[in-house]
Image (cartoon, rainbow, N blue to C red):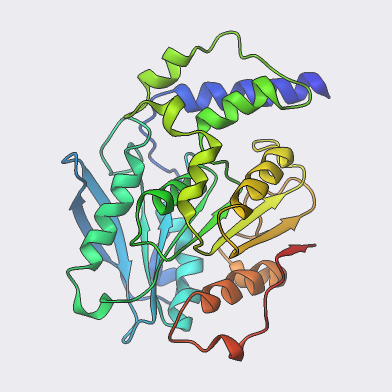
Length: 302
């Protein structure tokens, strides 16, 4: 079992250090989900890199959800099932592939938050989005980008993060110092990590950076036996975040369910997941009276 765990950790590190041009093999059409064809946006982040996003907006939006692709999955189009449900609730949805994924440019980590900001800046140019709450959502690497985007941008109202850690570097340090058993990653150096980053990543990505959530709402979801992200890390991240926000909601499921929802492209089929997700959205949307919905418990497990 320990050998298997070490192999999983080594694979995570190896994959994160690879420069990948990810072109997702499975792509979906919004119209398969009863949605109008999305507007395709060709944006630029502050580095001048092209950012591709897809916009789906109801007649009178009550909020904005930005759905961020994962490292290997889900792709931007895999969020259309969620977008359909958000559309019914009155939310505009932007699905996007971050740097070095699908049609979006870029090659280094920590550029991704600038990709998200490019989408946010676009919403500021549209009258229908003025003063609406902005929620960022992501799975795995996308969940990490959602957390970091929230830390760096006060334009963001709330974040939804599934199966994520605060950063790859913190995951690396955690396994060396705090994991049980510890693992040193003998073939990976700090220089290897920083060469693949757009910043001094070790110093900027420590867990203490989560203080930047600054009392904003965040929903963390995790499965107890996730092979990619240790549950102990989720516990540590949650404990640290509670020091900086009273608006943390966590949702925990049994087994190895990296995507939390049993059928990610059909989120309403998983009643428990869907209820927590939609209740959280309604909770952070000022135009919807909070008294109209049941109060979320701080932590829910199924």
